[in-house]
Image (cartoon, rainbow, N blue to C red; front, side, top):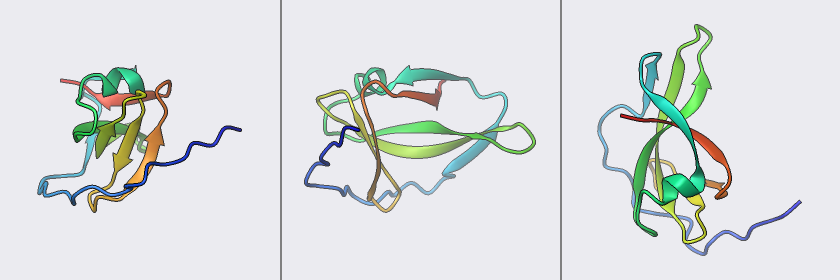
Length: 101
């Protein structure tokens, strides 16, 4: 098992978004991308907001959660909650389902 050392700053500014943080939808377009592909759409060190799939509800409707990510130079994505605390690190090769337009 490989262990990755987290960066020294595990916090970003708290979120000021006042809308919903979860969406339930069977009609929203979504697709799977690697973390590196998503990181390439943003700027290293700047916040990238994505609606990440959190699976399906009992009734089969897909659930999406609003997550703020900070792309890293190695292609990984560091995910933060609305309080600004880092909660997850997606390695560059990890596949992530996100809502698309």
